[in-house]
Picture 1 (cartoon, rainbow, N blue to C red):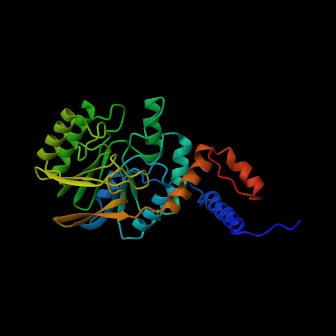
Picture 2: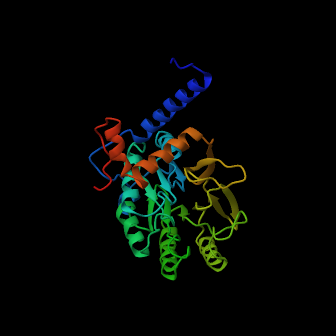
Picture 3: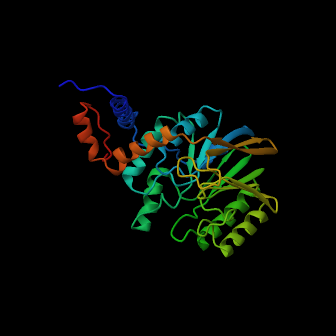
Length: 323
């Protein structure tokens, strides 16, 4: 008996083709460049030799598993004349080795040769063993607190994302000693952290406690820090308090939490004695979000499904996350 063609048959067939296309995008092979990781190793002495006092850089934060949003954003940053980028934490959903390996393989496709510096986020450090979480971050991303310089500007990276989301006393001491040394040598001082000292919106647990925040803010005011950049809120904000500019980055892949949700990043321009900042927002794109989610599920959370799919679809490549 001959089946009658209906509009429902057409829609069902079209839906199947779309699903197969999205699946193909999700499991297509990544770029293999012979190097498992391509993060920027911090070298303070090397960056002190940079002579240009006019440059531009980008700050973005909270990627989580939003590969479909993050990758085109990073590609735009890499080709937009930025000297470097700072990622303000939560580059992965949890601090396991396979998550880091996948992230750096994806990053290698879009970063070009642009240096990238990392700030530890609470998700990056999240493991059953807190010490192991910090060790994994240091292994894949570099130190969890450090400084570097570019031209006449020094950049200080702080770790306030470990257990308790606070700044320990020993890190406060390191920060004060470091700012004292850098203030004598550089025109501008910028500080990067994951958890903000401010609460620009009503949400408990998304900023430093009041005593820690006040202590931190007094310290950056004392040494004339111009900017404090943070993430964690998944929401853009900009406030000036006692001469210090506090900027929070919108999410660069994680779920936005603003009243008007947008993805995005911060662009900062330094021109001698002057500097300016602007927020670059990106419209939500359900297709990119869906592709990123599928990639994460197949390649990271459920990698055991990937060999099965390669056999079923006749593919010969396989993401080896065990290396």
